[in-house]
Length: 456
Image (cartoon, rainbow, N blue to C red; front, side, top):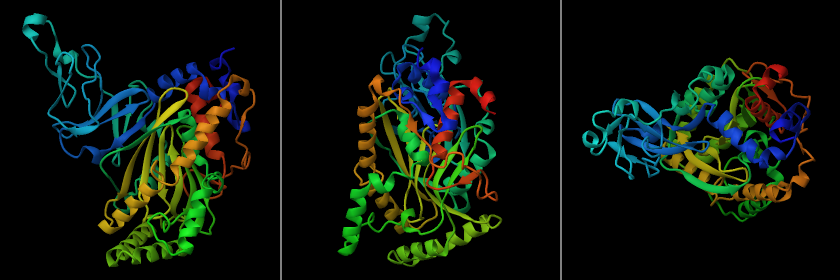
C-alpha cells in the first residue's frame, strides 16, 4: 500500500502516534498542496505592508506565487503571480509600488486590480477577438481580519467564518492582534531563510512545543547567565521570558477537536509580578515607556474584566496551517510572525516579519525590534538551534527503514480537559503535546475529509 492509502493509521493522533512517512513521501506532499495550501484560508501578510494604492509585496500560498496589492480604489487583492499568456511571472520583486504589472516575456500588462489592460499589437495580431476582460490575472479570495490578510484559492471552499471558529477569532483579535491596546504595526520587509525538514515539523514545534527549550537552547541559557553575572547588558540578555515568571501557565487550544486549530503555548494569566518586571524594564527607557506599560495594563484589565483569570500573554503559537507566532510574553518584546512555506518534502522556507504595538513609544518599539533580531532570527541566538534539530531529524528519519516506528506525542494524553472554562477554547496543562495532536487532527481531516465525520 502507498503512504496515501495508509494515512489514517499513520496519523493516529488520538493515540499520540504519528509515523515519519508523512514527512518524506512525495505523494503526500503533492496532496498537501491541493488540500491544505490551495484549499484553506492561509495568511499572506498584513495591511500595513500595502499602505498606499499600488503598494505590493509578493508571497506564496504553498507553492503558488501570489501578489498582495492595494488597488487604486484602496481594495486589498491577492493576485496569482502568473501571466495569462505564457505563464511568466509578472512581478519580479519582493515589494514596491507600481502603476501596473508588465510581463517581461511578451509585454502583456495588468492593472493593480488584476485586469488585463494592454497587449502589444493587439489589433494587428488578435484581429479584435481578444476579450481582455476574460484574461486578467487569476485572483484569490481575500479576507482582512483586523489587519491580518488571509487568502484562499478555493472559491468553493468553506467561508472564512466556517474556517476559523468563534474561539479562534477571539484569540486572534484580542491576544494575537492586540486589539484592546490599539493593535499591531507591521514593520517593512521580510527576513527569509531556507532550512531542512518538512514544513510540518517546524509548524508543530511552534504550535505547542515548550518542552524542548531547556534542552535545545542550553548554550543560550548559559551565555545569558554568564553575561548577567558579569553585568553585561544586551537587549536579549535582559529580555523578559515566560521561563522567568514563576506562575501557572496553560496550553491554549482554540478550535479544539473541530475545525482549524490555533495553539498558544505557555499562556500566562495576569500576575502583578509580571507587570512589575515590565515596569522595571521600562524604567531604563524613560517616562514615556513607563506610562505606556501602565496604560496598556489598564486597557487590558478593562477589556478582559469578565474573565478570571485574565489572559496576559503567551510564549509561542501557530495558526494552522503555517503561521507561527512568538514574542508575546511581554510588551517589551517584538512580535514574530513567521510563515512556513513548503519547499518539497525535505525543505521549507521561513518568512518572518516583525510586529510592534502600534501605540507604544518609539523607544519601546526600538528595544522590541532589537530583541526580535537577537532572538528568533537566523542571526540570533534561538533559531539556529532549532534548525539544527530539524536537520538531524531529516538525517535520522529519511530512510524508509525508520518509518515503521512512530513519533511519540503522549504528554498529557487523555488529560486534555479544559481547566479554565471561563476563557474561550480549551486551556490545559503546560507544557503539553495537546496542540501537536490537534495539528495532526486538522491535517488528517483535510487530507482525508471522510475522517472528520468518523472522528466527530
